[in-house]
Image 1 (cartoon, rainbow, N blue to C red):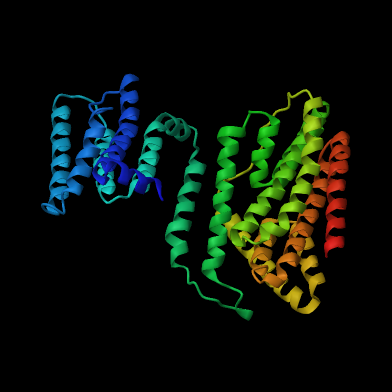
Image 2 (image 1 turned 45 degrees about the vertical axis):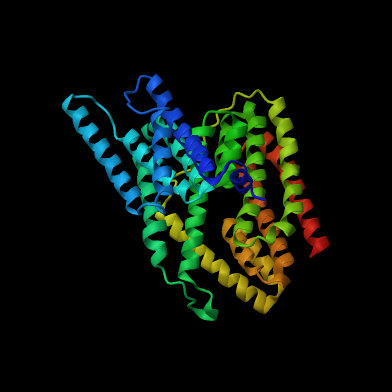
Length: 423
């Protein structure tokens, strides 16, 4: 028996609705009351909000006995009351925003939802609303630190995700019907969204918070970018080579679970085949890097330049790369079998692992290709690891090249053995 059904039998459906409405009102009212204690002018708090939610619930509950117009009249009366109050305050030259008014209107609507027995949905909505209300200071701080470039990138992402993607044709085109504009657009949006998350985590959480955290967050976007930045820093500050080497290795360690997550998004069955090998490769990187961090001075600068959070040219370039890899995988498998897929992965991994991972996740939607697809993804990560090893060796200090070489060499060796044994 569901908890709400048990409580309804215990205290009755009406009292259950009253209690849920009371809880929702208290959640919202507590936040507004706390806002008033901080000196913010307000008129509604911990008593008013529960009254409004219970009022909404009661009117909604009475519709069957009286009229369906009751909630509408009550809603209109509430808006009228709040509007008159706003006019009076403006004439009295009291500076007051409309947030509390909107929150009261939301509280009334949530009470109506409770009357329809949408208990969980209404409570979840209340939690989301109170989170938004309580994060006012945080949002203002974030907005103050957002650059024009980042704001423009966000606008471009919204246009891409909400205005362009929905209108792309969801049909197959081209040779062998491999080109689906909506599918390709969806992949670009998903990858761009994940990059957005990683970019702003680095900006607002990781930057100047320590090399370990910054490397982890940077690895969510591009472990190659972290390697490029940290290798150069180690050469200009060779006494900090241990810390920068650890940062390079940690960022690369994050690549493995990031790709596992990406593959799982497009093919949930892939996780079963990728979990063990990618966890093993992650541990091979993490354990030595933590030891390097502990033995270091911890004074390394941690800023990394991850570029524009959304560059349209790069997004289109990724789409083109994905299409090229899509055809390479298809024809490589058709003409060369498994070896053709491995060649495609090794070549693709030299530039990027994201596109080949998504391509192989889709390729593995057929159960017969699941195991092969997972091994090809691992091969791509080894190819990319080799590229980062070359960057660390050529751009970094001698010590950085040595430490990164040991760890990445172990990763390539273990990964190759795993593919050879299971392939």
